[in-house]
Image 1 (tube, rainbow, N blue to C red):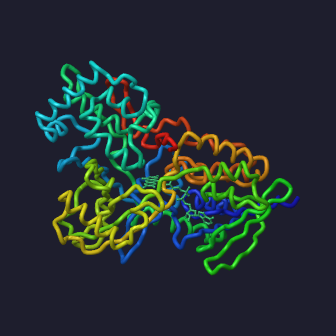
Image 2 (cartoon, rainbow, N blue to C red):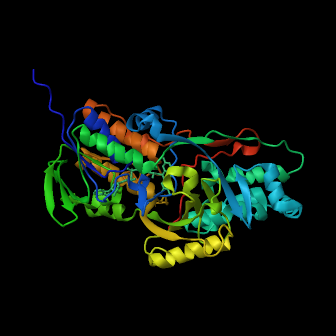
Amino acid sequence: MPTPRHPQTVIIGAGPAGLTAAYQLASRGAPVSVYEADDVVGGISRTVVRDGWRFDIGGHRFFTKVARVDALWHEILPEEDFLLRPRMSRIYYQGKLYDYPLRPLNALRNLGLREAAFALGSYLRARLRPPRDQHANYESWLVARFGWRLYRTFFKTYTEKVWGIPVSQMPADWAAQRIKNLSLAAAVLDAIRPGRNRKEITSLIEEFHYPKYGPGMMWEEAARKVEKMGGTLTMNATVTAVHRENGRAVAVTVTAGSGQRHRLAADHVISSTPLSTLITSMDPPAPPSILEAARDLRYRDYLTVALVVPREFSFPDNWIYIHDPGVRVGRIQNYGSWSPFLVKEGRTCLGLEFFVFEGDDMWTKPDDQLIAQATAELEALQLIRPGAVEAGYVVRVPKAYPTYDQHYRRNVEIMREWLAEHAPNVHPVGRNGMHRYNNADHSMLTAMLTVENILDGTEHDVWTVNVEQEYHEERLTSGAGRITGTGRDAPMIPRG
Ligand SMILES: Cc1cc2nc3c(=O)[nH]c(=O)nc-3n(C[C@H](O)[C@H](O)[C@H](O)COP(=O)(O)OP(=O)(O)OC[C@H]3O[C@@H](n4cnc5c(N)ncnc54)[C@H](O)[C@@H]3O)c2cc1C
């Protein structure tokens, strides 16, 4: 009896989701072709290389509770390429560095007795006379619980930098979704509140795995292995159309950097392109109501300015959160702390992270001005001395964060339902592919389950990945409300 033919699968994107799918398919002998619009693999998890300096988009920890993802990481990269790195990150506020997760004594020392007393007073005032409507918005919810002073010190500025809107415009119900930052404020409160037991914060990931040349190393190796197993990977090749016939996708059009187009047949399409892009590339087009849902998805964008400085300005943290309102930078990565293999002798590379919107004043600034601004901010924070920056590089990342707003869930549902009916062999995976706040591990898991659905006929519901999963990186072991954080959820951002 002839063995059944494996289906031909086209994969859109060579990020973690696309390459995981390709790896799984190729390792089972199934034909697979990956098309990547960029000239490097890894997507948002790539390692950027400029003049021999290597840096992440942000910093990418390899941490997961999904055993099969962990196993795959170690299957792709040999053990000797993994470093086990200590995790350290602190909060910078008004010239002081606060341990994070917060330790009461360190917080008290940094705040000083006077400020701690003010914070306690402000807390007591809020408890005695809470804002009239504590559920009006996120700010009033927080102030009612922690008082204005702690709220301003440890919550307001960073949240606003990341999401780009005032906390007073965020809905209160995000609080119910376990917010990491709250654990910080709660711990400060615990430190200054009389008559309460000290809470102990346990961190479940004080060490993490990290490929010695950065996360891109994982995806460069995965790409090599996919090709070795017979899969094909084409770079600088954008999938610009998904063609449908008789209620299924039958082919894609790939447009090369030169503008040349090719049509390629496909039995299945695994897509990590943003869900909105996937829908708008359908041929014949999706109906107007579906296109409207696609165009209604929103994103938060990101840019990083990597600055080379002498090693004397290195710090032990992987990154520092910048809570000072006087500067635009939200976080500062120290790539030398991630891996000594990312930096050169006698120097480190600091990555200043700016959370932006595509097209805003920061996004459109020329690179030299961004480098000058990042340098000035580092100097203002007194993390370097004037004149210490030797080189700078800018990387802009559109659609870094899929935005959750009051319309997104419905929009995603509309597109999902339409795809299921009109192109059931098109499989959205990953982060933007599913418009889900997925980290690399969950992005990979969606790809693994999709491959099983294709090859084994299983019916995994890929859309349930990262929904309601317990994912606590830190937890308070006792105390009021047991406020815990996943670090993997995002607030609902109201549409103006
Ligand atoms: C600042 C920041 C820090 C992060 N830190 C961590 C961390 O510490 N740990 C962690 O696990 N995760 C982290 N993440 C999340 C992680 O980056 C993502 O989960 C992961 O990269 C998503 O993988 P993906 O394959 O779904 O998408 P992507 O990484 O976005 O890859 C998609 C790929 O598809 C390509 N593409 C898109 N459209 C087309 C098209 N039409 N044709 C061809 N190619 C196309 C893109 O060029 C890209 O290469 C972080 C994310 C950010 C923004």
